[in-house]
View 1: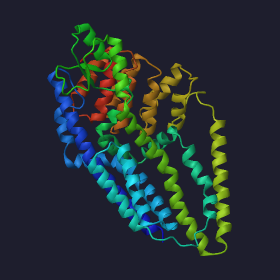
View 2 (view 1 turned 45 degrees about the horizontal axis):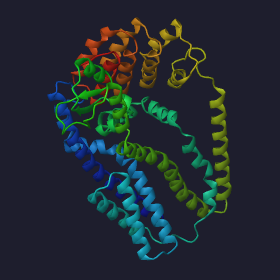
View 3 (view 1 turned 135 degrees about the horizontal axis):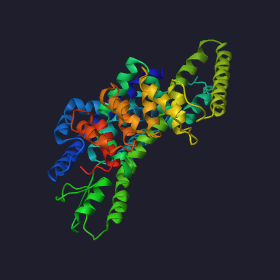
View 4 (view 1 turned 45 degrees about the vertical axis):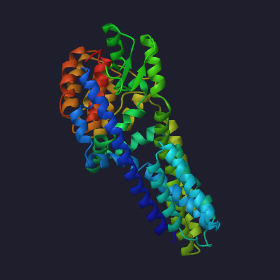
Length: 445
């Protein structure tokens, strides 16, 4: 009884979010295009190039990029709409209250995502349809299902950032998973630039009335700040008399402003909130049906809950028992990752040679973390093999990590190689890493 309305609402949520993301990404891309053209006119090499940005503005590219929001915000929309409509229907609230809830939740989402009248109307239409789709629930709904699902809710709460990296690494270990990861990094929206920390931003353009010396411009350029000659297309208008460090502070303050914080919170909350809600909702439906099948179903449910709890406790204790950074890792992506994130790393020749060997692994996750590890073990002998990996590896994120490691080897002779890749046909995401690597090596463009 609950599955049909939920699937209908979730499908509409995906469609609504896809429509919203298409128009929002297109508006952002047009503004970003103007900025890139200004940077190119001022003599810089922008990432991506204006010609590449015109390809991104095609409908197919925008729709593919929109899937990033569709499967994060889309789940949030679906779960909130179903839960709200379910509660309104269960307590038989009046139509005026339903209408008020629809307008209120639509306004909240619209404000969170950057208010516009068209977005508000789109969300009102979606949440209004959700109200109509959900019927009065069956009074035989079993409340015990809520208590039985506590361990399931604990899973996403314990699932930290390292867990998401683990999922990516597991995907990289099979052909279909590699395609999924490559698709994500190829079509992840350009607006990801907005949620990048200010110190890692690749292109922040400013206009100022204060004349700056060439040495000051070069110093700011190394910090990722471009001085442009056109006020209209600049990110920030600095008309006051500021010194170089003061300009840095002003840019960091503005790039971490309200719009950036709002987008970061939206994506973060969507991922964190929807995970337990989605698991809870699907499990509720399954448990409700299970309890209605036979009198023995409760025993089965208790056994399942006990098994899941035991598995959770075992995984937590086994994780705490392992000590990171001891010895050198075998060909295991998880072990190499533990070495990378550990504070007490063994930095010897044997460990470095082990990581170099792992760069030839058939497992992309192993190559990814081995390349990252070599950033902590700089040596001139790493340069050639990392450059080969950055040039030929078929997985986008592995090439990115090889470029990242190259920038920490302390060898400025790699600058011509990185410049050649920057002007090539790499994805914009790879060029983002190339640009940051060149900046780290003191390249001024």
